[in-house]
Length: 215
Image (cartoon, rainbow, N blue to C red; front, side, top):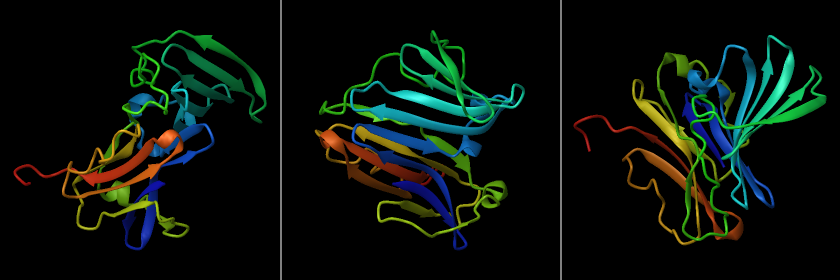
């Protein structure tokens, strides 16, 4: 499932997820990460969240350190940090483990306890929610044709919403829940639910924030 915005016959992918036999991985567009999460030395950022069936979820930051000319993969778990290092050709050099540092902006969003396994029937996990203002800077980035779309993709037409706030993201929840979590958040909401392994559901959503004094 991909979350896209549509404008003048063109699309921009904001986020998407894929599932394997035992893992869910969701990606987010690096240019829309909060600047607080990215240092000036971190270039070519790839940010994704991995949720395995056992619940040992982690955030991953893959990036090139432009000062050292070395590649890194930083995995933030509930109880530790694993930092892998690669040379300029992405040959693995080694790794180290570090304790959590709650003052670090890349770590504060990650839970301090292990998440529930997907076989649990009543859990809810909120993948990172992202938001942005629809303006000329955003519109300039919409360059791809709307090809190769699947029936599970969410494609939101932003025509006429200039100046409004757009939010999007994913939820994962257990088989006990049947109704969507974001069904009544806004009159301008699109969502889709996909059942994955263990009967759990991935819900993707995208919506425009309601204007004040309007229902």
